[in-house]
Length: 561
Image (tube, rainbow, N blue to C red; front, side):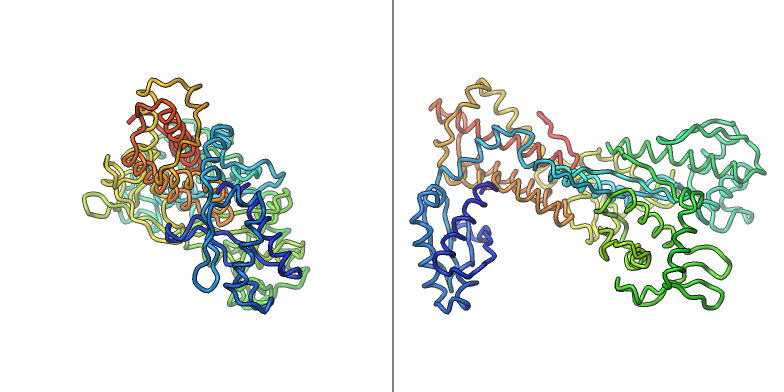
């Protein structure tokens, strides 16, 4: 059902309930039965009310049905009603109610499935890689998840800001600088003098060569950084290497079709005094203590589920990694983002309670569940039945660019989105390259292209298709396809609510399946001109909704394949 139809039906059921059980306030939910033979829509409202109403649930269900079907507005939506089992009410929609989706899609076009602006805003932080090497396949999964979640929120009327948080401070950055320094001095990665925690990928040699050549590099949001070529100036090497890798990551993101609104540097939290201010506030609020020369945060007392207190400042003086995260999220709150989503690898699981505890300790009214987190598991890449582990350029892992170069942006985006974030995923390069129904992105894109070809070959004018009578669409496979299209807006809303873009991937696959089943069961280009135009109109509506769904994942909708 279309959302507006569903809301109308819920209101009618609520009115029927009010007439029979005046004091009841049931939660009327409409669900699609798992078995199609049981109807189009089902509700358990009679079973909810039976006990408080002190009535037999089947008897109450019958009374509700009688009251409901006495209303002309209900009869316009519902063709038949059955009471099943202990009191389930199974409803079958009228043909007109099913067919209404065709007109809705025709009228709304690209806006179908999108909600009006809500005035709400959300900050989504994702990828946020250390600028110490090329983006790897885990970052690619995060990029796909993050961008899809942003698109879903935008489709639901939110003002979305995409933010990349650069960890450009700490030991990893020092290791980057000394690695570049060593390569520039001609030290090989297998030499005894090579830094113990140095980075060994070929990209380190590239940075070293450009540094010695005194080249300039510039990240997307920064000023040009010119190399001095001075191998004794580790700070200069660090600045150049960070800028170099930030530019490389920018290029990776561009290849992925991803543009961020903001880049936020961890180093700015220190230079601006935000980290120190955050620590001072936590001390002043009485949420810290000193032990063994270290400063601890009483995370166990702050109600976010941490199992033990955490060190904030180590005995040697440096801050632990979650402290700048607290300062950073305080800055998000101060920037007016009352809703924030962080997308990170599952190895950040321990961070969640600590960061939230730190925010509670500031006592600024920040909710305990702020920010929301999506934690994703890593990706295993397979080719020819064997795991691919090494990229020559990166040295130890498969890069985002490797995947894009191998299978293309569309396949990378779809494949990395099609499973729940918290499940491990095997990226099968051979499957992603195959032109078969087993390849889900090919299967869906082919459905879209098939429709485009069909309409182009029909010789029908767009105006004739748009004016076709949807009332002629009465075949069961047509009803099934129209029902699928009608579910699209509700699915988009649910996917955003649950931070679960894989719902879109599943829906697209099911829609393509319904389209192919309908195409096999019904000839579209029949001799009956009116029926031909009606079926072309349904095909065109399906094309539009497939394109809308693919756009939510950042995947193209080709017109030919």
